[in-house]
Image (cartoon, rainbow, N blue to C red; front, side):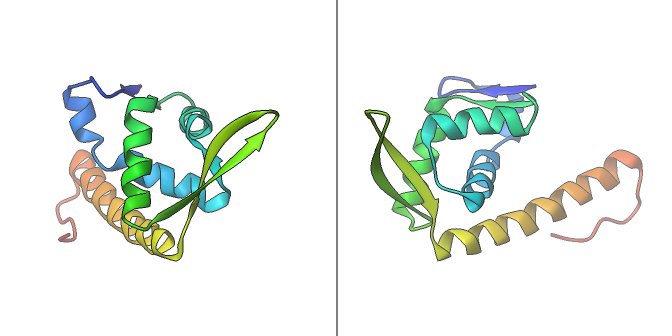
Amino acid sequence: MVKADATTNSTATSFMNGVPELLLLRLLQAREMYGYELVQAIRDETRDAVQFGEGVVYPVLHALEKDGALKSRRKTVNGRSRVYYSLTAAGRRRLGDLTATWLKVSEAIQGVLTGARHAEAI
């Protein structure tokens, strides 16, 4: 399990750089969600293998919104006001690019781990 929050500083966390962005964009591709809902969805979708705290998720959401990959809106549900995030066209393009890169890198790493001799250049 990889568990990270804003104060975690470990090799596993360094290895996971970029993963919160990729997972958040992918989850938001399906539907709009609010921050804590995304924290829980990451845990659920990875069967607790990856756990990012709110201290990791919210800064990434804010950076993605600032970059135009996400848009947000405040919505009141059951008397609670929450900020819901959704993908923009730029966010969908970014998700496609990140996914392609991730798949290429993970395939190359898998090749090294399994002894494949020639990994495609990234």
